Amino acid sequence: MTTSADFIALDERWSTHNYHPLPVVIAEAEGAWVTDVEGRRYLDFLSGYSALNFGHRHPALVAAAAEQLGRVTLTSRAFHHDQLGLFCRELAELTGTDMVLPMNSGAEAVESALKVARKWAYEVKGIPDGTAEIVVAGSNFHGRTTTIVSFSTDETARSHFGPFTPGFVVVKYGDAAALRDAITERTAAVLLEPVQGEAGVVVPPAGYLAEARRLCDEAGVLLIADEIQSGLARTGKLLALDHEGVRADLYTLGKALGGGIMPLSAVVGRRDVLGVLKPGEHGSTFGGNPLACAVGRAVIRLLSTGEFQERSTRLGEHLRERLTALIGQGVAEVRARGLWAGVDLTPGGLSGREASEALAAKGVLCKETHGNTLRIAPPLVISEADLDRGLDAIAEVIRR
Ligand SMILES: *Cc1c(COP(=O)(O)O)cnc(C)c1O
View 1 (cartoon, rainbow, N blue to C red):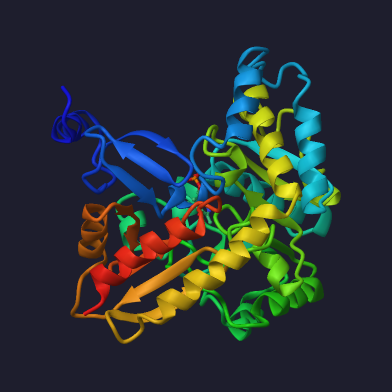
View 2 (cartoon, helix red, strand yellow):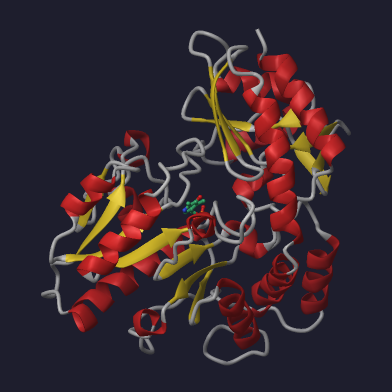
């Protein structure tokens, strides 16, 4: 049992087929590089959908995890432990928010924000019980739970998973007038991704997010920013909303918050909103566990220097320049923010899947999203030379 084909056959036989991975079997990883079971090396240009913003096995994160493994890993929330309060204070201070609700997966953070927003709407805003609405954007991606796919516009994500949770209104992303028209006296919150990652790194028109903030203020509605993929330095700022000078009432964070080591997510935001939760009303066995909190604290230390935000901005400019130069040569459009890009391949040329497979053969791992778009998100620790190496491979594969 040594070849990639053997391991792929095992997955095919024993694991559900809810993914269609590239035929690469990773055995080891460090920084921006991974190595497969046959010893071939690849540059990671996906970074676990931004869960690996600090690369694989960042020494400071591995050290924090190892140290905590030698102390205590899990207590449940039945007892206090010495990492939770520090993690929450440090994350609140980093993000300029009042308090933190720790969870595990991104979907759980989004679910938690939706529950909190509804409770706030009934208990604080005074909307009649059971009637609150939450406005969301088309082409959203917020996770895979039944409630979250209830307001997905991706038929593949929804089909045969109903009946669905009511209370959501979908409007076109980037259209401020549509958002204005959708807000009523029953609206509890507006939930948006500041940049839609899964949709192909879609950046909304300038002014859209500020206008969303203004409309929410005017109507006394919560603005919830899902920064699970866009946050934590991926776009060159701590939070993607910072590009617009906009503050949300609640943010959902995840992915990179766990440093690529632990699942760790959180809702962070206003005390008068998160404060509606009382003992017994919401929770998670693993949420805020000592091991995850210790890793999260090390992530916060990395982010507090600004080094990764700066790298993302600087390397991101280079990424954008080199990808934009391919427009008309196999590339139809490029959208980029920080070290994060959506590259639409020219219709009739290589499909996203074919391009990803050809890139893997050249030692660069990335993945298509929605057919003809490549999502490119190298770890923020990547060197400029390695970034160029990956971009050379991309140019070779898609230039026609
Ligand atoms: C990945 C993602 C989620 C869901 O996170 P999981 O950890 O996979 O549940 C939610 N929102 C956004 C914007 C994401 O990118």
